[in-house]
Image (tube, one colour):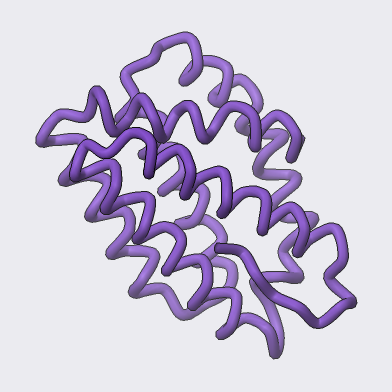
Length: 143
């Protein structure tokens, strides 16, 4: 699942930066602000996924959005399985890193900087994959 997401979502961010409408930019900003306001791990996890879908919708690439939507339940299961990164003592650190990464992607999309949006989403998803692969290491880096 992580391999599929790290392949598809950077392209979605790229196309979001190219194709976003003013309404898309506003929705993405609102999704980012909602995530920044979440202090509960479960709510944060849900809002995190909502932000990723907001980026996908802003791409206006119907086929890639359909693919992401088709694996939505698998992504939710994966997220629930990895919920340990959104809980406990490491949550404040994870929260800060995720917010920083999402803000960087959001800003690039809103500015229309497709290359930066893609690069920042790649970095975020690869860091997330590394964090959930080795959660015992104590290193938390999801941006």
